[in-house]
Amino acid sequence: YKQYRYKDALKVMQAAIKQVPADPTLISHLADIYLALNQKQEAISQYQLALKLISEQSKQEDKERDSELTELKVVLEKKLAQLESHNQ
Image (cartoon, rainbow, N blue to C red):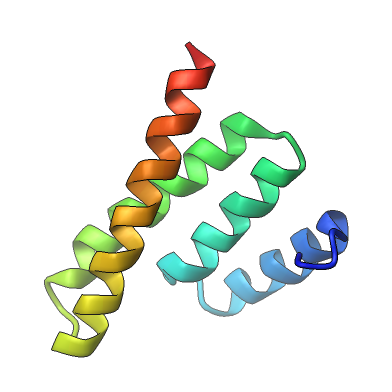
């Protein structure tokens, strides 16, 4: 991703998510890749899924993980708000 090889990054991230399908961090990275590929609707869907998973997992995880999820949630909410405002 950081090397701007988004199509390659997409394949790698999709494979990673098959291994760990409920990881909001991986899903948020997938959304970032879709955004970089200008697939905005898919990015929005993935950001929404990541936020849903964060909500579900923050009730179950330990304190350190909960803190990480809270930080990720703030970042994702900002990205999603920006995307949705540009889509209108």
